[in-house]
Length: 149
Image 1 (cartoon, helix red, strand yellow):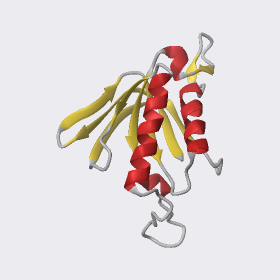
Image 2 (tube, helix red, strand yellow):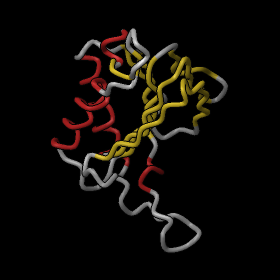
Image 3 (cartoon, rainbow, N blue to C red):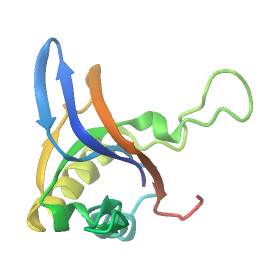
């Protein structure tokens, strides 16, 4: 499982001209699910993202999590995080999970974040989404449950 985590002062996702999810300060998280993902990958991201210390403390040091600051998460599915463009000009998505598996793990991840007390807004799975955000910092962190980066 891969996540692109961005610390934002605001973010929204729009589908067919209608806002489906919108947050103020918090994290905008793009989520990619691979064909090989298991419960262990899900558990890793369920713990890692809300506990990632990328918000400033009283000394201006990134030492607080989205849980600590009472921020929200805007979660957006993005199979293209598993696009492999090493071989040519058109990315291969062979490592991206099929929609049924990807949607199930995406929904489970959101549920686990909500169980931790995080307010989570979402995009709409398998739709053309327009994502807007104000990256605060900018701060962008790449996470991979296989720890490839």
